[in-house]
Image 1 (tube, rainbow, N blue to C red):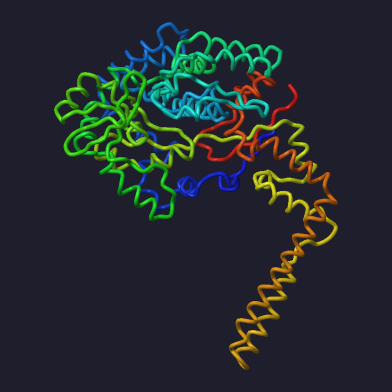
Image 2: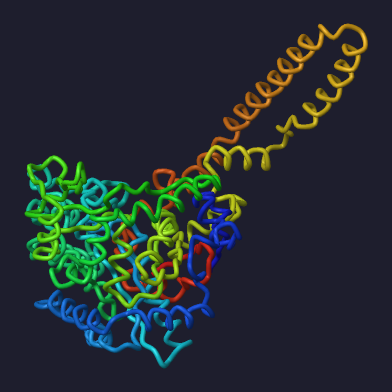
Length: 538
């Protein structure tokens, strides 16, 4: 299989913050603990080992065993869960929303990055064990982000009646209504051994499980159980109980807000877009499926848009009695994760890493080790036929990532038999007007404005002529233009990265297990390049 790669900066799809982080720019060093390089893991292991209580391991293992009850657990996953009881076992974690049928392709890339890193670390540090964790965002409330997937250019959407009836945390949603989605999916995916497997996977996940949490756990387990993946939700009473001291600090001292606002401001002052702005209290109240933020006002605590209020003593009593009702938001969830997991590294997308970079001071204030932050692998999947088309059109991998009008303009200029670049004429015009400015300075300075206006007019005229010629040449070369556009539209659906749009089933229906085997073979999370993977005829 031909493997190509380009730098993340050459894709034009990653933020300046992430590119500077990957380049280890000095101004970003205060925002993270250790950079994710193989040589830095030994120190991260020692730091986490010294700080992680054995009681937390006991509670974690017990909780995971309960979560896996009734599920077919592989020997590899079972061994990983049991290994977590030892103080020489550590986790590598990624988190993801409960997207319908995994959502976009990068769901696979995240999990494969995590599994592959545990293998690399085991080889480097055989005296330790490393467990890959997929953290399900069961308490997330962004239903509109997770209730669909794209297949063959079509959108398959689930409309849940419960979502409009007070159920906010998506993990609690009933799977009612997904039979209709299954019928549409089954018709679209067609026949064949791999298509039949996908149908059974969807049917068993969503039509035989009561809620979205159980369905997603089943789905991810079926795809990755042979690789030892451990899938966890974190809404259990015993897990939340471990977080009580940190939730108390949040309620009484607004500790996350107080310890992230400075880092957030510094990122902004450095010219980066801030991903998340913290609230004064970054906890939600989660009960009977609804999830609303907690507000403090005049010494009392309230649940937003609910007739619920507590005094300080009452809310602390509620926290101790029902810790599972207190749900961390995006600013506190990372801390919760690191409190209940013996975690070394979090693997996420650019947007996730951007808000993690706001949190280092908060972790230090709570005396919890800040994990390494690693950008998940990214890849473009193409067929051999598409690769051959790109080569015939003389499009480089780097050019493939240009915006379509830039790509077409560049290729039309290159293959045209006339020169459609008026740069020399513009340069000559500017040189001529420099002499006119000099003449006006010596004779009548009041003419400087008129000279400038004429220069602008003539430069605009040349721009206009250049665009008209380019447009005419595009018409003349319409077949080449059409082929260029068609190829890029295939590889960049909706003019976006393929991994953010297409569902894995589109590729799996053609290549089956070869898809996963290829990704496991070629996605090395410590190699910070954008991979281009080519699949031949099966």
